[in-house]
Image (tube, rainbow, N blue to C red; front, side, top):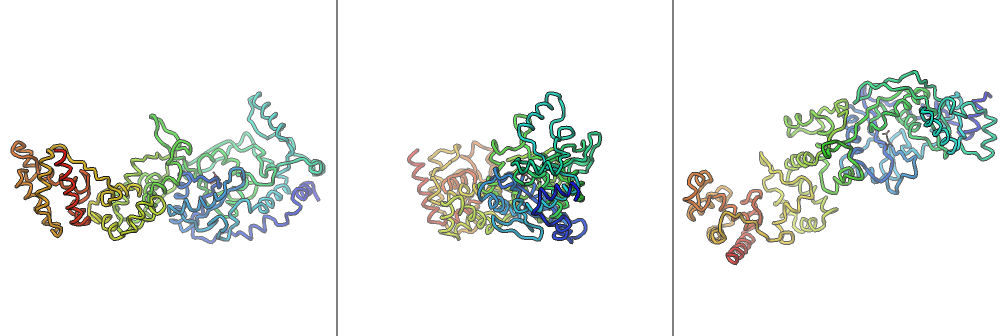
Amino acid sequence: MDDNTKMAELLFPEITKTPADYEEIYPPRRLPEGAVVTRFSPSPTGFLHFGGLFASFAGMTAARSSGGVFYLRIEDTDKKREVEGGVDMIVDGLRAFDIEFDEGVISQTEEKGAYGPYIQSKRNDIYHAYVKSLVEKGLAYPCFMTEEEIAAIRAEQEEKKLLPGIYGEYAKYRDITPERARELIESGAEYVVRLKSPGSPDRRVKFKDGIKGEIEMPENIMDIVLLKKDGTPTYHFAHAIDDHLMRTTHVIRGDEWISSAPIHLQLFYVLGFKAPKYVHIAPIMKEENGGKRKISKRKDPEAAVSFYEEAGYPAGSVWEYLMTLANSNYEDWRLANPDADIKDFKFSLSKMSKAGALFDFVKLNDVSKNYICRLSAEEVFDLSAAWAKKYNTRLYELFRDNEEYAREILAIERGSAKPRKDIAKWEDVEGYVSYFYDELWDRKRDFADNLSNADMAEILETYKTIYDGTVTAEDWFPQVRDMAVSLGYAKAPKEYKKNPDQYKGHVGDVAGVIRAAVTGRRNTPDLYEIMRVLGSNEVIKRIDEAIDALRTLE
Ligand code: GLU
């Protein structure tokens, strides 16, 4: 037995499977040419970042549009950062926005697919088999350095202005013999397993990033840690093993990993794996005080995916917005194809922003209003009721007590060529429908101030005498107009503008008084429709109330 084999047996006596076995267990996938296999691989820290949703969205879209596979892998090697239920939070948080995985972890306790386990903490034997094979080839070794020794090396390197890290002469255990290692282990010394880096300071590594293009960096020369003291892998090592064995073609991840790419490429090389394509996504940015910064978990509520669910942005709106952020040509496509399915858009990873897309609330709300205004009344009812059930019990109960009524309210002015854009998120629905419900409406009336209370009361008193709940939509406005004229108002704003002294106002002012009396507001959807839905008893009651109020204040 040569020394390397001795070392491998000393460190991993219980590991019997070899890389060749795993190659067989996880064969290359049989997929169409060009199919993208990619993954979302978060740590279960209990916080789902909007950037994670963005990356998942990009990954899922790339996989779907190429006939590939999108899977969820849980990177839980850092147990300190893990929270209970963290996996379900990720799965549910993403599902709320229609991010579904073809494979991988599907809940805290289940997974699906032939390339698992998809939770890193369940893959230790696999990692160990590969480290063992590297040790056998003399490409990895146990390192017994203590924290203090490493700190002393760092201090020395800082003082000498040298590259910090364990490499070259600082890699003290590079050539340790199996005999010495055995002694140390038997004496109870702890160790990590390090890569014996084949890198050289005068070589550079080049790769083509799917978003950033050609990247060139110095080769990795560090003897980086592959296995930590507790035997769990580092991110670097687990990434290489998992993405190889799960047959990932595209590693789509945050660009904070770019600086580690030379390590990763070297790992793929020493392990004899074909490297995946790297696609590094820039973080989502926010404008602040004239500058730009990353959206931050600490400062920005919108950094949390839960924020969008709680506020009630429908998945469809969020998808529209994400696509707007992802591909700048999407908006033009949407304008040209207002009714097309978003899936018909030709999404391109390479068109994603190199510098970081800018998050903008005004835009999000705009995009969302445009999305919601095209939904049917049924859809608006179903989605907003489902949201209210979780986040607004009062609204939910009102909807549930009289579904028919709620549907009628939400149907007002829907389906027209130019639908109104009053709702950006389900949180807005209560305010939007409030005057339809005694429980929600404060009965305050925002009358315009260009007419006297006496004039307004007169309008309402007269209107009461002609109001008829069975009037048709076509007859309604002419009726109001005739009444306006009889009371001394111009029949059209144009006429009023020509001779303002001849009139008390115009028909719009008159309708405005009725609107404020019935709804409390100056601006609403179609008033005729509102009155029809409220019913004539309620309309008369509200007009009476308004007359009383106006006469009292006269
Ligand atoms: N677990 C890593 C993270 O949370 C994933 C990076 C990757 O996608 O490879 O950042």
